[in-house]
Length: 124
Image 1: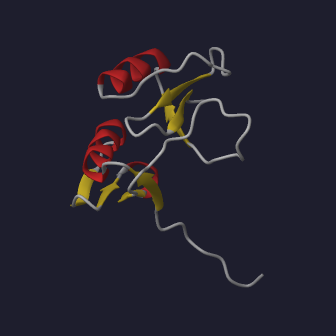
Image 2: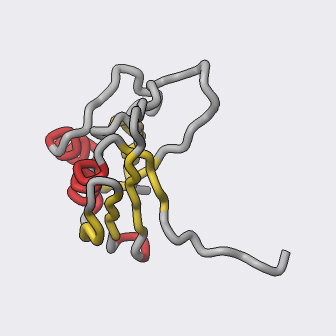
């Protein structure tokens, strides 16, 4: 293959793009670079500047966790230095913690306000 691509951004379906972007901006830092009811975007400063977009989907239904009957969906993994502190702060920002936790002491699964699971992993 002679052509490679650079990842421009990740877009997530959302029931409320403005609120979804506000949550992720609080978790990841950076800034909200676009905010309308139909679409919002956060550009982070970590990891070389990754952009996350949130597009309105009417009738949005979040995935369930865990869902062994559906096909594998994507999720975001985040690295942090202090797992317990990050969990506490992300829950205070609007995330929730489901009962099923496969990571033991190495990572925790949280659910963002729109129902998307994400993992918070201890760095290193």
